[in-house]
Image (cartoon, rainbow, N blue to C red; front, side, top):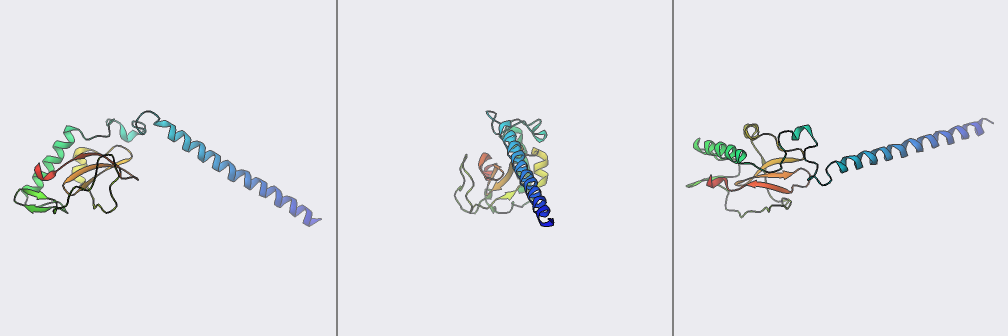
Length: 160
């Protein structure tokens, strides 16, 4: 008799466990669907995060370009170049490589990029949620986190 009771209890526990696992998956799928619906027709969910307040567009503005220009001009005046750029007669230039990125396309895996200096990020502000700023050779890029899709660029720091 004890074995029958134990088998029934085991069956009940198995059923309860299966129901809990199934409900967990259903709740997770429902939450994922709700998150995906946030940005439908609104450009990847712009403006749905507190971090996006005050920054509605995923593009560099003139004030960002000015801050970047001022930062790197000052950097050059100090006789230095950012990592990956070589000091040339006409300023800091990438070491002879052609531009390896394209707007609207992911960065190739072999492209070396650097995070922007914290003091520059303070000046231009944090990027919109889901994006980050990087420097590739002589260009500042805004890329999508996860896909590395190039969304916008400030090109050719050597000519600033």
